[in-house]
Length: 410
Ligand SMILES: Nc1nc2c(ncn2[C@@H]2O[C@H](COP(=O)(O)OP(=O)(O)OP(=O)(O)O)[C@@H](O)[C@H]2O)c(=O)[nH]1
Image: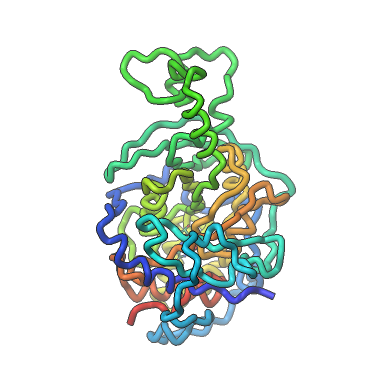
């Protein structure tokens, strides 16, 4: 049995007041698709979305949904907003409920640092673990990935991150890892390459510490001589489970301000949460070049036209003879392993993503799901448009996303 999906938007009510003063993570133009943008032929595995994912041989009959009253269409039971907080003052991350993933814990604001993301413990190894029950189709083993270069990126909101660029053996796209924090390192980047000089290592980003004019060695001077307390502190930080977002490329939502989806907002919000000073565990955004849920930009634009003609996002994909979701996550799993991760806290509403990113042999374990509630639902800015509301409604009703449409403000 699938657990009752979580009413994530409720938890947002409590933190409305806490985050409005915090800097928002705006970046004017973040994405540039340098790779193929048409069919995503490299994807060899995909998430099975049961009836909606089968590649149709004929175009399916569609029923147009002309309802505007989105709140009446939630497939997710909504829990009363007036529910009192539990007596515990601990973060819900550390107090798993009896049945993981079936409720969004509500916690006293005063017990949390401002805007600390709150997660719900999940366990994909049990049917009631809060990750749905669908089995993703996965490759038997993980693809091979290699980080070929990384660079420090100071961002427009003052936070800093390291952009890691990966190659792999299943497609020819440049998939990326956006890493927040200083303790997450790529094993393949750090590996010594035959015949390379110290300058080669500096230029491809395989250095410790920071670069500065005149630096000549890739190892930070003084490394190995750090104080015992500093080493212990670093080891402690490494043990913490980082916040992770697996993001799929969306040129329209991230670059040309589309209000058809919340992809740009989600990317900004993930970066903001990961760069909060309270997030000492660090964070990783795996940025996969699987535009349009894997169908490519050209096909996604056709899908938009079908949506303007009355189809929802799933129907439009099927009418174009694509699966509802043609994405795969094996590269994300392999990149996370390369970045030294075995356990993660995943920012998502998508139960299929949780199972898929864990890999064929649970190479990664998702210990917690952190909901991505649209900012406008939480009264924290964001934007509203009939298109994005239809998009979210379809995700909830047809793709099992764990969001409560009943919490959508009228
Ligand atoms: N085919 C298609 N793809 C879309 C449409 N709108 C957005 N997308 C793509 O959907 C993907 C965004 O999905 P994500 O935000 O990664 O994640 P998700 O699986 O929906 O779930 P969350 O993790 O909860 O956000 C990107 O690749 C977008 O380009 C659409 O109308 N049609």
